[in-house]
Length: 226
Image 1 (cartoon, helix red, strand yellow):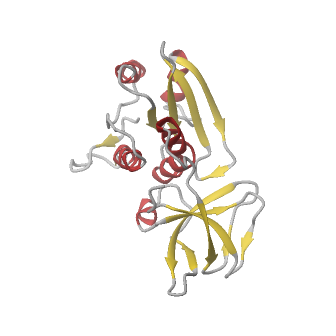
Image 2 (spheres, rainbow, N blue to C red):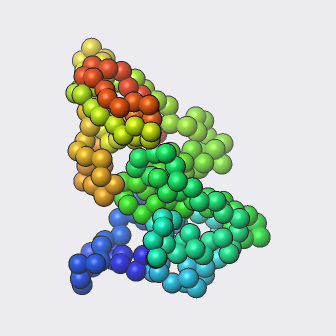
């Protein structure tokens, strides 16, 4: 969602516009999880257009994903409009990235709808944490939760206390079988380039403020299909 979004390949007419990365990113991630995907594309900050777009999907979708419009801003129309179409819950989750989240049961058939935040990295991490397990659970696939593997930290790391951190990482397996992981860039939710270099999400628990080099960590390996 967002009037500022422009399809890749077109020109940006002003500095307020940005390319739509999220719909392609999430469509690819959902397909990799095993779903049959219909990428609908963006909708502007228009209440009637959003309602119509969602209504059109209810006849074919087992699950609807949106990205953007779930925070506290004036143009967060998903949060404003979707409660008119079904039972919804919006929450601030103690997770970084991916603090704002939404879930709803929409329309007469109560189609589940997961409403993810709009920053690209937040959207992807939220997909891994919430949407991917839901897709695999609905499919009957096992395991529906991505298994965590133990890796040694290649360097010292810090984390924000009080929030579960899902940091972008690069995992490498050495000749002796030892898995090591390093962080890929910063924690910013807009740093899509760092995410593109990553093959793992490093799980830093809420109570963990610092990690020493060589310390064992739980990691989700993004290149594995299960």
